[in-house]
Length: 181
Length: 266
Image (cartoon, rainbow over all chains, first blue to last red; front, side, top):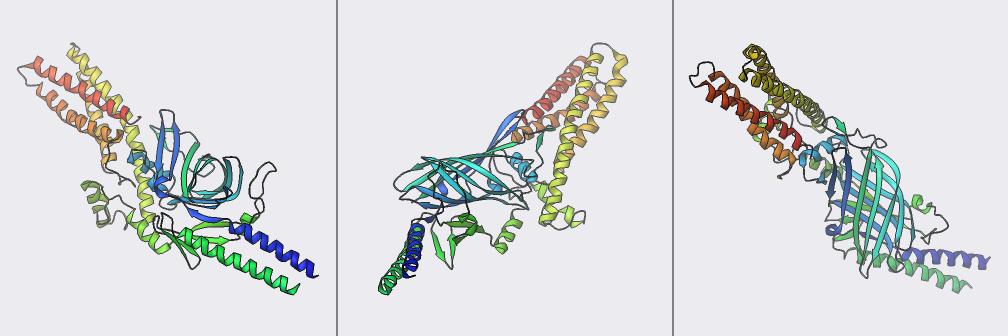
């Protein structure tokens, strides 16, 4: 019986030590940005926000990430044309849903490639997505370049139109975040 | 054996406490000036409060495929963002109207604008602003349709005007009918844009929309000048010269109007 208790305590101790390797690290604001790419038959629109906040749970020694959260103020996206950005905010109802957020549910990795699956909440709709990411580790920093795409229709967003022609349904995102270790 | 258990338990406790202190120290030293207190990670740089949830059951249940070297089964700390509702509400109201709306827009649609003053629209609230943005979209979509219609009418007017100048005087009534239709369509199209509620975002920038609006000043001037010069033809003793001015003014106005439509597609 005592051996069993000892074994259980040791397992708990091992798990606790494992936990101890992970810490939550917020993103470096100056090195974090998110860009979306929207395609219209007449041209492609590229709009970037630097107002992205993100936190990862990371084991710096083992170079492992096991949880990611991020949020972005949707009204901070800038395509260089505020009229166009305003139109985009209308269709995603930025007054009711001023932020888009992501919380990971699983993270898997192989070498510098990381696949992050999680819940993306955008336009008040939550859908599961998977991001394909590349990590760059240095002594004091990890930088993540991630990309994913969503369907506007899946997030119940009416496709905006220019000269009565709507944009494509596919909305592509790229995300760059850096974290001080 | 009991002593062994006590030592082991003490070791586990020590590891947990040490780790908690280490996380606190390292996190508070980040460039975002974050710090833990009362279980919350406060991040000054982003004005967003992040609450840690150690041992989140949802994330513990994560699954992986067999080929990865990820942290299978490792206990993790997830992070979720928590809104400060009061601060958010105040910030949200401040963002309902852009700071740099024009004098005319403020006069019409501002917090104390004419539209609210005489009761055509209610006080500015998020719901009301959503309605106004919907109205704006309808007006601007109609503005785009009106642009196509006006351009067509303008080109027809120019065509029949050219025919009259070429000697087909019998087409003058048709030319005049198209002039009237163009003026009505053009004015309605312009008013749909000018009177629409302000956008949600407006920055000081040079964009295709800026060029669209700049060209509008040119074709507005043309739309005023061209019919005035045309009216001068009736009693002019220098018919050919006035007709030439009228012709150039009409073509320049039509071309500028077409250009203002084309630039918004870039």
